Length: 208
Image (cartoon, rainbow, N blue to C red; front, side, top):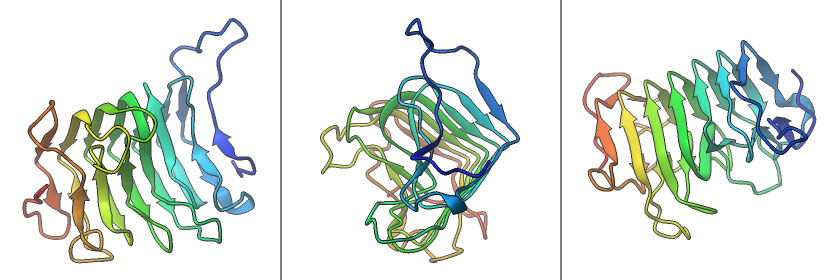
């Protein structure tokens, strides 16, 4: 799939106003070469879906989760840069509920990268998000923003679980320029950090 629109994949409501059920998008390649560098590969604000065994590359913006969405078993490489000034990542959210990021390789490289997984409470709280068995690397400030960023309108993320992820030193010895994660309130409101390690050594990675 050669994306050329603002949103390259989006699940829309049906004519009766309800969302289609059990939507799965599998074994799909999204190549953003022909799109603008600030176009978004995956964004479905109304209806959830599963994106599985995908390959997203030559894109400049974060694939955004809102509600009831799973990104799994996929390779997402955000490596397009330009003059838009957009903040960039691989897969993330600006608020939403009941999402999963499972067993992916997630990388963001180049000018404008914030994180491999940026999670910000911009439009609603970040709640009920499972991040499990992923490999993260970025040239950005941190490999992940954890949904509880004080400067955002909704700074108290809840039920966010980072489980058994690998943080890579591909770009920096600290994964991101300043560390593996920030804006994550571990151990409160159902937030969990467990089993996360440095990819190259297998040693435990701390959320602090």
